[in-house]
Length: 260
Image (cartoon, rainbow, N blue to C red; front, side):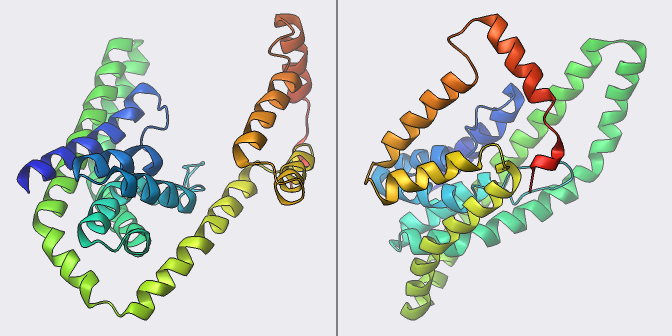
C-alpha cells in the first residue's frame, strides 16, 4: 500500500512538473490515469477511466482569472479509488469533481504565500536580474510539485479503505445514474471548450466534422487526420515562410466581432 501511495504521488508530481517545462499537457487525466492503472495492475481500466475523465475535464483550462478544478489529483485519485473498488468509470466520475474542488481549495490556501515569493521575482525584473527570476520560477514550481506528491500520497494511503467502503454503501441506482452521467458530462466538456474556440471562421469546420461522422460513418481518427490536413493547408505549413507570414498578418486583422 505504501509503495503504491509513493508511486501515485510521483505520478501526480510528474503531472505538476509538466508545468515547469511550459507544459506538453502531460498533466491531463488521459495521460496520468493509464499510469495509475499500470501501477495498480489494471492498465485497461486506467485507459478507459482516463479517456472518460479527459472528456469531462475537457474545458477545464485556465483562461484569464478563471482557475479550473484540479485535474491532476482528480485524475490520479479518482482512477486509483475506482480501480481498487472495482466500480469502474461510474465511481471515477462520482469522485473526480469533488476531489478536484477540494484540492483546489487546499491549493488556494497554500498559494497565500506566493506573493511573498513573487516579490523576489519583481525585484529581479527591476534589477534586470534574469537569474533571480529563474530561481523564483523553480522554487515555486518545485514547492508545488512536492505539495502534489504529499497530497496524493496521504490521500491514497489514509483514505483508500474509507473511500472503498463508502463506494460499497452507495445504492446501485446511484451508481447506474453516475454511469449515465459519464455519458452526458463529456458533452458539457465539449460545450465549455467550444465557448472559447468556436467563431464564425471555424464554425463550418465543426459542422463538417459532424457530417462526416454522423452521415458518412467516418471514424473519429479519420476525421482527426482530415482536420490535420486542413490545418496544414490553411496555415500554409508547406508553403514556406512567406505564405506563413502573410497568413499570420491576415489572422491578426480578424476582429473580435467574429466571435459569438
